[in-house]
Image 1 (cartoon, rainbow, N blue to C red):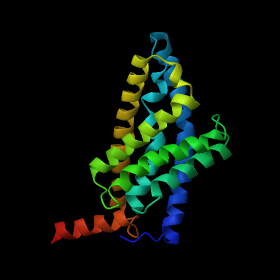
Image 2 (image 1 turned 180 degrees about the vertical axis):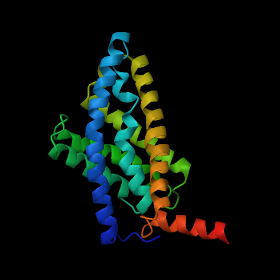
Image 3 (image 1 turned 90 degrees about the vertical axis):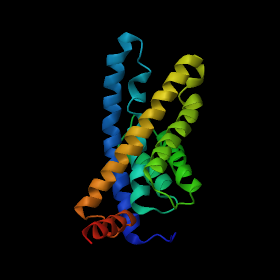
Length: 201
């Protein structure tokens, strides 16, 4: 595995960061809507938790496609920075939150020395981002003042969201892109091409 980045990979990572920054901003509105719906039932705290995995997805997609150290961390941080430039209501601290989320995802890939990009590792990356972001939220978002049962429930929901939305959905989106052939020059695209050739032979 080469750790040297080429210009094509840097450009793709930047594009993904911008695209998902816009998607992330849209989901702030979705989260607000879910919170409003759930609040009368005493479940307002879960409005964002059920979809929280969407805010980790660019880190998994970028890492899975490019497979280089730093891909998850940098792409997530780029997305956070672009959101701030676009006027995110979360403000400049969003960049720090994005960095921490990306760090959680990056940790899963680093644990395999960037050699394993299986479904299990992608799910672990989504979970890692969820756990790191939740720990940050204990202080930054004031979760520490909530009751232990509520905190535990929120963490479980966020972890599940990270595993399913960031991990599994991120894998599915990446592979659908690979199916189109647009990723031929990247690690995932090359792997996909090899699999096709083996099936054809």
